[in-house]
Image (cartoon, rainbow, N blue to C red; front, side):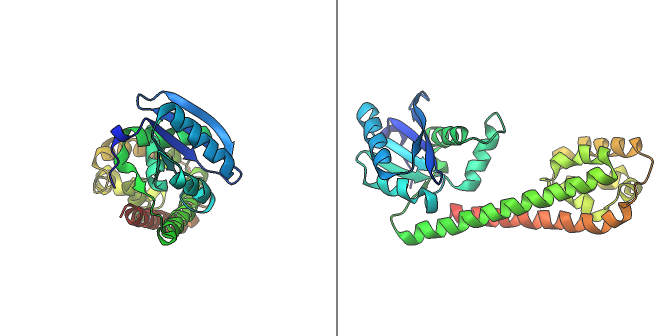
Length: 267
């Protein structure tokens, strides 16, 4: 379903929680009409929606979780007058969060991002069907994505920790870029600093170029600058050669699985 922005005077982003939610309401020009926490109960939700629509007009309420802890506000909003309800998928939410300044995750920040996405990018939203079946399906998919995200973070942290142990300079060069397939490919093919050095700049650059052409040139130089700065071989480096490709492979698989889940959510 495509939402017509001209149908709404207000865009409400709701970051849902177990005991309370944070709501941010934006006008069509982006001004804040509301920005507060509220308890997770029907009366408060009804009062808020009623007050906002009386003051401003029709509203589009957008949640980040339509089931489980988000089920009550969705049900209340669906019965409210002059309110339509939409859902911002978790993976899309994370992508939008990357576009906004600041990295600290807060309920208020998330609620604002949800509302701002609704106000400016309605095509990113998904309709919430009244059927329990569809809501349950979304809950399963988003719950599984949360599990995949936790596994991705753990594998990435383990890989960065391993790199820091055997070659801190190399970790500083590639640790923040482990979301790039080209970097993971290099670690899978040449899992120790010495093997990367032996492969040479040309082979390493070509390996990265297959997946990340713009990154290949400058990153290759950073890698070899780091390699030249450390001459000692730290104990445990050869053991790391066994673990490094496993962790790199796990990350590639996890990224692929998350893409599959996103495709299903967006379907």
